[in-house]
Length: 114
Length: 115
Image (cartoon, each protein chain N blue to C red):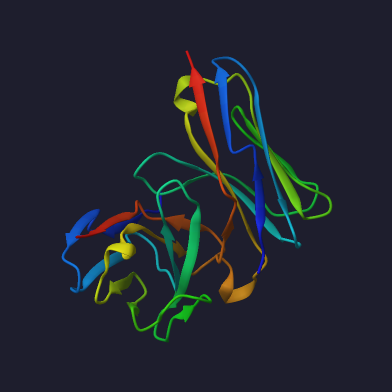
């Protein structure tokens, strides 16, 4: 089945620094999603990408859907303490009624030091 | 905005018993819901796709007789862990796909501890 390789596994940064994380896939996805998960809670959608090459921003977050459709990155600019959490990429190849079957990356644990 | 609610948020059950977890879409209809399992410090793994009015589709390696899924209405899917064992202890998360589009919403998750 599909596999997503997400890196880095963890990051320790100072408040105000920029962050970058990425995911690569062994196969093509037609949708890439980036989520943030706080401990003990469900994932919250940050950015959704639907077209190859698409670059989308959500506040301080920017994500891109790779042209090959096998990769995506997420950037966080000017990090703040509340950015702490686990970030997951997710992709789906299914369409129609099966849309929503997501394959998740391993997650990136972000720690921001004040 | 759209909300997906799971109940209970935390449950402790004895080994050998069964426990039911509910996933509700509160303000939209969801023809399709998905169940994921997440072990501590790991990623989310899809267990099954729940389709309203039909049988669930299970991912490879997930025992359908152990994890019973029922999607009896457009707003409710239930996951029943039967004959639970300590290794079933995990964070179970559902998501719902809005019937009128491709937007997906996740529930808050349910912690299951089997003792």
